[in-house]
Image 1 (cartoon, one colour):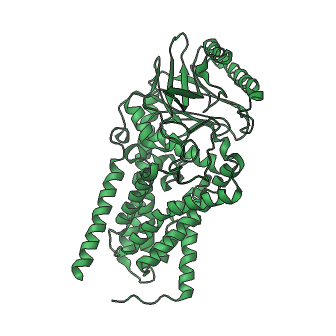
Image 2: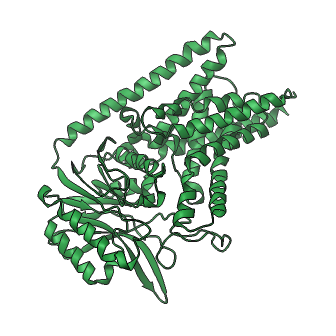
Length: 518
């Protein structure tokens, strides 16, 4: 049976609907109540692909994805052009290339959604498809799970507690499921189909009420458990070092003095843990220079566990491998612990396929690419078992889960978001990091060179937060969590993997049925 020809005016309408969906998805990552836009963001796209051919549905999904990612990740141009010293045209081309790649996932979702029959299972299969594609996006091509739709709800604590079962993918599933239910309701109204309204509206309300009730139960339990542990006083130092002078030798002593001054200002608080940001030290701490000895003396003076970032290197035969390293110095301890960043930033800390992409220059100051760390393990300092996530690693839930399974009772995120300038990227980065605390029921201490440093409770509540581009010292009390692992910490992305299998099976079944009819 041939599909009816779609008039050009209707085609333009569908394109505008697809663009609207992309804009609403970006809008949902704005703070405050704008995040509620996520619960209806897919409706325009779903309306636009009704009766569309598979090829047109794919194109509309691509358009929607481009509208979303170009507006969500515009800050890449700032990073590449201002800090990476790339030509503005090359920076714009890089943004377009990445956005095109990420938009392919939206295009395939649109294609698959357009082939779904209108049935009671439509919202469920729709949500399965979305989460399956999010999971693939998080793992293919080194993985780039930036701003998955579930992250938009980070301020709604009762909803995001689902993450301790299913990770951020559980929240994504719920959002898309509700989008699908609302779409079926909207589509049924002109047809006066009372059955759809009768079942879909109560289903949407019950799902949201159930998620909220679970969140309330979990938050109450986490707070009650937290009262039994021994609190740890933590101080976070945000020195706000200008990225353009950070690695200038002339500013080296001034940078170190800023950290000395801000750290000593915490002495009256008597912290047990002091955290500095990623690459806080503009020198190689391992070289045992006068600066290194000063840092060790400062740690002893504070009487606290001092965690900080510094570049590092190892010589292997004739080659030198550079690392993005986090150190921990415990008082009265002869040993200095360290963790090397495991998941590096592509095109920032290393260049994948660099022999094929000579126009992309490295954004790091150290000579040569960074190498990946060899192990993911907590840093043990007395009663503290610190699961360190360096910058970009905070968006990968499997890394935090591995650290918690290995005994981490506090998560520590060291980052340097000065690269992003005054864009929306630091806000996006923080909201993703919050989910690592919820998934694992562990508090998180986040230290940024310049915003947003934060103290995050195991519920995801932000107890203290700095501003952008200011010197600041945050103080707070966290309770190391030692109670049993959450379902998500224990089993990881079992939920997302299951939905991937269901989605593949459904697609293959659909192909088999169509071939059988032929």
